[in-house]
Structure formats: C-alpha cells, structure tokens
Length: 195
Image (tube, rainbow, N blue to C red; front, side, top):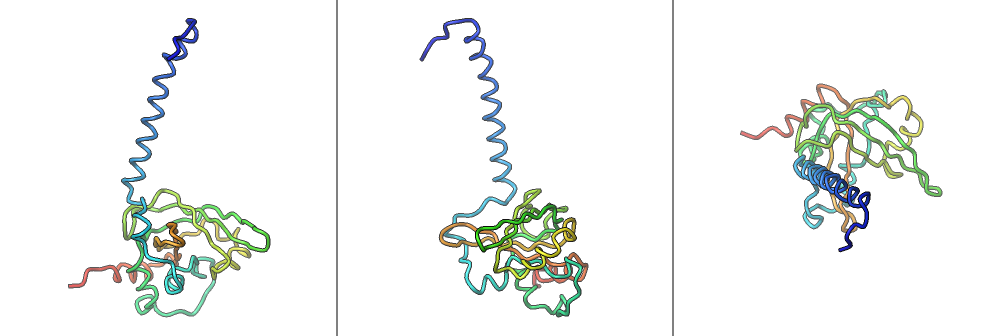
C-alpha cells in the first residue's frame, strides 16, 4: 500500500472513502429492490420454451381496439384465448404506452415500446414502474405501430406478460388487451379460485 506523500493527496483519500461507501450502499439497495419487486427472473431452465403454441398465445401484439379500431371479436367472457392468456400470464397490469422507438436492421424492422405501470398488478407481483418491450416483425401489431405510432402514445391497455426461454436465454412475451371493464372482468374471472 502506498502512503500518501502530501496533505492534499491524504485529504483526497480520506474524503473519497465515504463517497465510495455511499455508492456501494446505493447499489446494494437498488439490487435488493429489484429482487424484492417480484420481477427477478427464475433460473432459465425453469422457464417454459417459447414455441409455436406459446407464440400463438403471447404474440407480442396489442389489440386493435387500443389503436381505436373496431373489430369483430368474441365476447370477453367467452373468449377462450383471453382466458388461456389470463391463466398463463406471470403478470397482468394496467399500463400506459409512454414511448415508441423504431429500429431497423437492414430489411428488418422492429419497435421498442416503453410502458408505465398504472396502479397495482391485477395478477402476479408488482411490475417495475416502467418496462421496455419489443414488437418484432412476426407481431400482428407491427403495421399498426408503423402507421399509428403518434396516435397510440398515451393509450392505456391491460398488459398480460409471460416469461419464457429461447436458446437458453430468458425472454418476455406479451399481449396488450383493451382497457375495458368487460375485458378486466373476464381476466379476473379466469383467475378466480374455483370453489
């Protein structure tokens, strides 16, 4: 260990120690919060594989109604796919779409969207206050995001989120449902304990 040679260097070392300790404490506190918010991933080997059936249920899409489009669909109470998503989701929460960022890789296009959690989770532990999701070229919502990205910022919807593994890496996949009372009721009924 080198001994400080001057008063100035000795003063710098003495006063740097509390700052280093403070930074270490802040880092440990932030790690603890991340571990305690319930969003820490389980070991990859425990996650289900993202296969063709999983991609049908959690297809990284947002319902057309969120974009203001009217479409014919089954009643939420009778929608078997909504029921399946609701029961399989690790997290369900109301969110607000904050930002959309387009990314191009050669001929490939994808969008990164940032959503903000609104209130407590409907199912699962609490999500982080903000979450970034990817909408890739296989998503049915890609065209709508490209043509209506300005209009949809600020929209609220119900996010159903599931963790998977793909090539031994943890990945998040989702579905965004319209923020309607009938959808919320169907989700809650799908998760209600059976008598």
